[in-house]
Image (cartoon, rainbow, N blue to C red; front, side):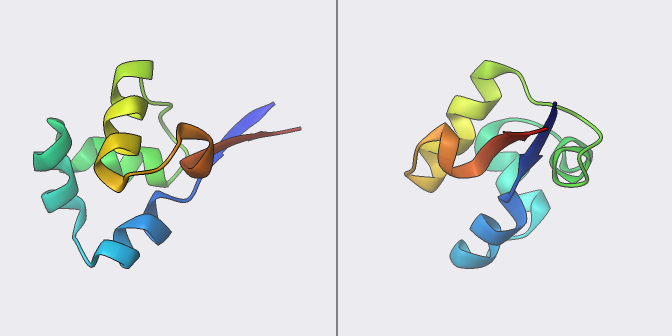
Length: 66
C-alpha cells in the first residue's frame, strides 16, 4: 500500500507556500516538499498538526492506496 496526500490542494485553498506551511507546523520546507512528492510519510504528530492547521481530519489529507 502507498500513502497518498493532497497537501498541495489544501495549501492552494489557504494560498500559502510550502515555506509558510512548514513554519506553521514546525518542520522544514524540504519536509513539506518531500511529503507532497510522496517521498516521505509524516509522523503521526505531524499528520495531526497538518490536519489541525487545515481544520480537517487526517483522512481528508492522507489516504492509502493499493
